[in-house]
Length: 209
Image (cartoon, rainbow, N blue to C red; front, side, top):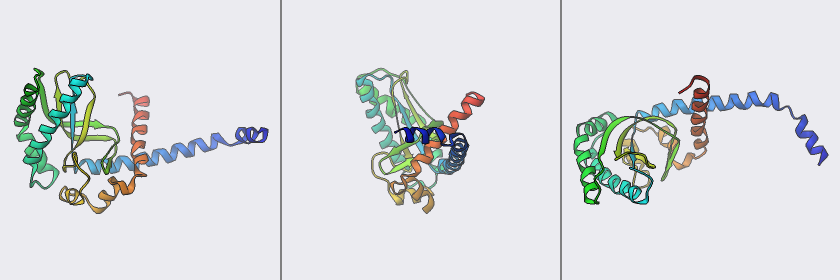
């Protein structure tokens, strides 16, 4: 046991630390580049509940389902993220009315705001897909005060309510390399994606928000 403790104390930690930091920085920079490329091909969905009460969380999911169904209909046949974004932008009022109707149907009087805007997302794993942390264009649905837990997914290509379809990703402009990057076949990349969050945290510590 003494030999083990002695070996630990004598290990050149100070030399190893810069190497580890260097590897993490390189990994984070690689993942950041990958994230920017992926962000140009997807539109995320971000639904915020009024509060964390069980009733408000249940309502969030009901509103989500209605918005997803309508967005899916609107985006049928659209090829490319720019075309999809244009359709969503033109139909924000329609989507908001659908969300508001569902809120009323469930017996609530909450307001709802629907917008298309850039939003920061942490690394997120869905069914069969992982997307790195970073800024993405997102269809954002805020119910009432929007102070409850949120719900994330991908509205274009449609990946929210089923397993990933390679055809859906190809339609959205994903290359074979993109597909390999985000699907379950490359789960080790999740660690690399997490490195973006580590790098972002370091930036905020050094330079502020």
